[in-house]
Image 1: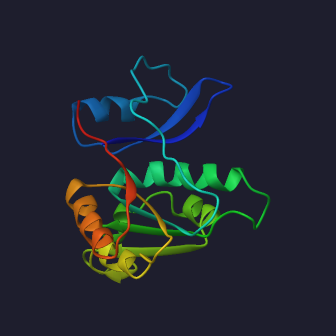
Image 2: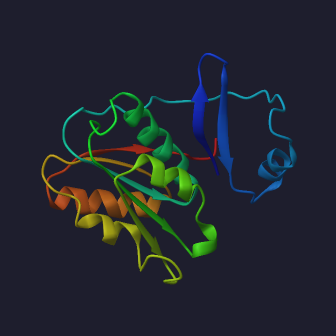
Image 3: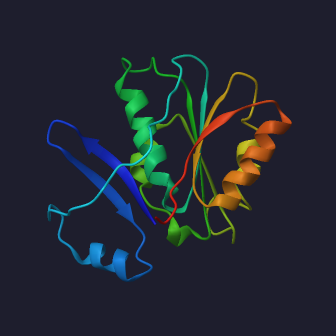
Length: 171
């Protein structure tokens, strides 16, 4: 699980969030910041969004990184207080699994946290918490475990919404 958190096109650099679960991610985790790495990234396309209407960003696990990247990019396009309203829904197994919370607070208008064990935020799945925000005209973006995104898609379809997903599968 590796996700892009930020990018500096002028410097030709980007920052990644890595969950250390296997030999490859442990190797990355052992590197010092700034160590050059040869890799093929990013693949795919970026999100597209509209300047009007609220945004709901739903993240699970390391899927939080591209959602923070999106929120930061949206905020950068507008004068202070003029960006679309950003609701950020973030779910994790337990409180210990949350990362980037300070950064999230800086880039959203509302942060909704859920944990499977109830140790922080609401107990339950992030898709349940996000459902109340799925109203007509809302732009929805998500990244996280496939079952989470599938459940969110089902809930979106029930109210006639479409959205965009960031797929981060092993290649």
